[in-house]
Length: 482
Image (cartoon, rainbow, N blue to C red; front, top):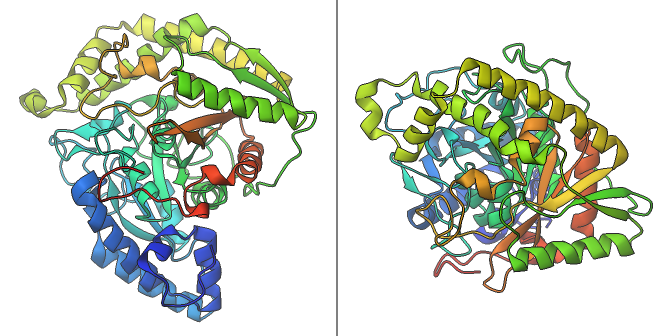
């Protein structure tokens, strides 16, 4: 969408892609201040019903937008995302009241910007506010004792997923064009799937992190947006080297420049079945239809199971639950009653693992990472459902009436890729009969983010009708349905 005049409606401003806004700023057709006003209004409008934001920073956003407006007038923008409205997840330090979704944390607004935020600020973005997360980002739905439940804009009785659920809702409703999420077990990709947006978990280390996550090196930082192109724009603005991130381990990387690719001759592994339970019938049908189209386009598709699949649940638990115990160790026992009971239980379970068991999990993870790297030498890509189920009711961690015992059990298409650290992108794959979005996951070799985003862009060009705003589709805030 290219904005033509300053009389464009608020909806048009909120639906516009970051790339379209950048072009409009350059031509003088629209101002970053007008876009900031429209998207801040949208944030306020949706927050009462959907609870996507924990902080909406009118003053800071307007000042950043005014500064950007002057830079564009002087023909001196800092980057292609100068003046673009973005949001930050409420577990990333950014000069606002970051609380990690917890009533036990102090205001950390005086902490230095996280490296990703520092890079984005240097690119000239307009930060609208903080988006809601489960407490400490510990689970794959978004609710917490401090800020409450975040709801799915396609049906407000359903969860948007998590832990970057607030970011996904902001994206799906036009409250900002670009959104910073984190992903330790699927937390970017799961809400992207449940809300019909694009979410990219980069190769580990491409986006620097500080402070280090309590959950260790399964945790990634990445972009969420409504189109693949915007996702790449944001990734370019937030990737790079920061000496505070000791785990990063490499020098700055070149910008990603996704292009349309020819599927003919590509070798694609189809990771069809979850390790626990089965795919929802509608999810299964949507994914299989896409696989058939890939084959008709000339790709060779081979069904596969992940290596060491039977071990991965335990390996992930030993990382994730020990991480929760690590986070709990910084909280005074007198505050335990303020915590999400599920988080407290997870942390107390994690504390029961021995140091030997934890190190054994590290060794198993290393073995798994090797065979995953080898698998992605055989295949150009691996594709799968992002989540085996569509969004379910808010207020619970697993679907009612299901056999799942934890959120990890319905996330078996996502957390294995955190263990192995490959880039993975979730793109919209259609909707169920009830109108709920479903995601397709595209996975590539470590460091090959550009290749993954190129495949995602090619997919977007094959199925433009599946992406919300290019064809005008918009969640209806009045009744919570599409």
